[in-house]
Structure formats: C-alpha cells, structure tokens
Amino acid sequence: MQGYISSVEPMGLVDGPGLRYVVFMQGCKLRCLYCHNPETWQMGKGQKITTDELLNKILRYKNYYIKGGVTFSGGEPLIQKDFLIDILKKCKANNLHTALDTAGVGTGDYEEILKYVDLVILDVKATDEESYLQITSSNMDEFNKFLTVAKKLNKDFWIRSVIVPGLNDSKEYILSLKEYISKIPNVLKVELLPYHLYGVDKYKELNLKYPLDKVPPMDLDKLKELEKYL
Image (tube, rainbow, N blue to C red):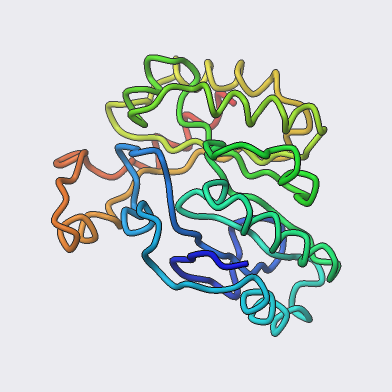
C-alpha cells in the first residue's frame, strides 16, 4: 500500500499526549484562510512511501513512545483513506497509541478509519455554515458526517480552533465555540491556537497569493483573555 507524506516529526510534543511520531500527509480539500502548510494541498507531491516503509521508520522510535504514540496529521490524513487505514492497523498491531489530527473532511470510510484511532484531535474551523464557508471555501457537510461517526463510536477528543485577529477573536465566537463543543462527548482538552505568519514565505515560494495579507499575528495576551470564556 503506497501513499504520499509531506514530512515527519519523530519527537513531537504537541500533537497528542506524550512524545509522538507525527506524520504529515499530503492532500487537503479545504483552502483555509490561515493555512500555513500549502505545500501539503496537492496529492502526488511529497514523498511516496509504502505503509511498511513508514511503519519501519515509526518503530525505530517505539521505545520513546511509552506514554506517547503516533499522530497522523496533514494536510488532511483522511484524504488518503486506504493508506491511512492500513498504517493505522499496523500501528495498533504494534501496540502504539494512535491519534488523528484532522479537520474531518475526507472521502468517507470514517467508521473503518476510526476503529483504529485512540484520539481525535479535531480542528473546528467555525461553528456555523456561513463562517465555515468564509474560512475554508467549503460547506460543513463532510465535517458533520465525520463528527457524527466519531461521536457514535465514542471517541476521545481534543478540540482545537485557530483564532485570527478580526476574523473570530471575539467573545461571541468563543461563547459559540463553548456551546458547540458542549454537545461533543469525551472532550479531554480544548486549545485556542494563535494565528501566526509562519506560512507566508511558503506562499511566495509556491507563487500563491497569501489570503490574510497584512493581518497581524494573534496577540497572546488577548488570546489568554478569550480562553477565560471557555
């Protein structure tokens, strides 16, 4: 089984509990205004690799992951569903904790994928259709399908939401987010992530227009104030 990955981080500390091997996979349907990984959008780019090759890379670090595991991120890992299912099965066969860092917008088979996932790190782009469309250039239909299956399977969640100055950095949005996630069971953690400018140079290299030109990074003091409403 072959797939495409953009990069890996063997000693990740933020994408799930403990020390983790993080796999950034190629492909994404969304075009989020604040995306800082545009190089992961297109399939067929990055490194072509088999699931056995990827597993061998992961297992080299297995002894470090006693309280950690493997996280599949992107891009959007759900795009490569067959590859993802195969590598998840192999990770579970080797007793590795698995996390899926996702926006919930793939191509189906969510129940089969989630059977092998211990933790869903869910990126909530917005809490209503209009805002979601503005931020991602897509509707919420596929996201809602994924979330419905994850809730049905009683998965554990970490919830993340990127906060952007002038876009969603308001008390009103945070309260709507609080209400939204109150309907999701098994939420172990909620994180407000500050918008940053790390991806600007990537857009220049790819000859792409940066969607949030002149928008400053999120003020961290204001972010702390917003966190209080959660």
